[in-house]
Amino acid sequence: MTERVRLRGTGRGAHSIYYDEAGSLVIEWHDFGEEAPYESANTIRLDAASQDALSGAVDSAAMPSGEALLHALAARFRSYFEIRAFADAEAIPFEAEVDFRP
Image 1: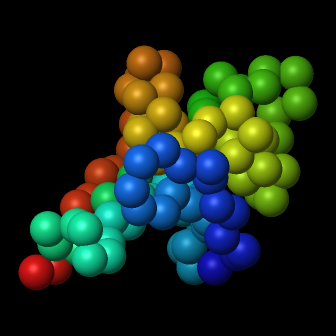
Image 2: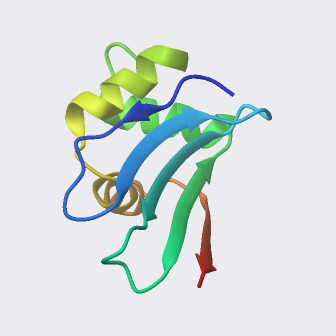
């Protein structure tokens, strides 16, 4: 796993991006704390082909990858929700998961 890069976020919770052990790009939003009715973790994972598509859609000239892609995403997007909406709009496939804990 690489460093976690925090996004500026909007509202409650924490928004971050990183690479997992398998090399997937992970974008996540955790909502937790006393004000949250329950703890939840929302993630999307992008494989190598989807990472290339996202990179090209974000900056077709530079095609950032690795740590550069993390920082390019953090500079352009404020939250998990913005990246997910962008990936949807660009028809970039990803795997989504939500984990709830009481």
